[in-house]
Length: 413
Image (cartoon, rainbow, N blue to C red; front, top):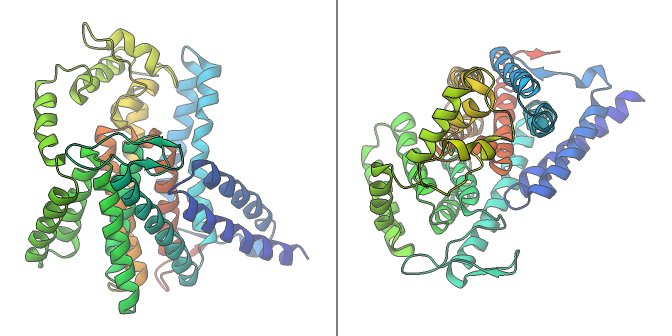
């Protein structure tokens, strides 16, 4: 009886997870409600011993992740505002998405369902972003979008922050490029390449210079790593992207010149270099436990550039941001966690036959993760729930795929 209930619960949890993948591109509230449903039914499924199989081989990643959470709690408890900081640490529940996703995606059929749900969602929201760019209408917030340079409007999808939208869709676009190259039949390839193109255009329409630059860098890195012999493809892709950007989003290229000048000078109070210097000084003054979760904005007043009235809630760089609010040990552990997952991704992919859907998805997750990390250089993306929960789900999906490799992976109880 228990096993029957557990089996049904695991099915329900998987479909709730599918809904989570579908909704994460447009609603943080709905996606987290569906994740709550996923957690509940997954917990019921775990009542049966037969349901407790879990992909093995990621021990060091789990250790670094556990250390990160433990140090977050310790630094918060020892900091100047322990109760406030510990309450903010509740966001670390997002790490649960990793094992849940790995537990529920158990075969290639479920992989395809997940890809289809996410692809449909990305395509629909990308079409909405195109509508926003040409009309300036934000139907979700019932307001007019800000005008873009020369033509069109800066889009943000259903999110309130266009950088969040741009970062999330840069990650999504990079995920689908490798997947599209291996999905059969030809119709499937065409659809997923269309998803990649539309997601890329959504990034361009956000007019976020950081997301656009990171996306182009990710495409170049992907071709170098996985298709290094196709150098002309690299040149063609970059050329097409440059033409599309110049035609569909005129003004964004000239914006890079202004941005580089501002950043190079490093004296403008809202320049990234100025913010990074302030965050670094904050970390240097509180090297062991930081200023505490939730206190960066208040402390920034003491470390901002002279004569500046600007206030920022984070350091616009994940490593510096974490070093500032939970100390240098926290930043070191964060880097250790990233090093562990990337190393294991590269290692596990060697056991998967190239050209398969599993290999394509694993390559897509690797590239999407690297794009996420690149966005975290100019924006504290790990502190951004919308994008971070996407990353957590992708890491869980990678672990699930690694567990499907017959004869190379074992299932851990």
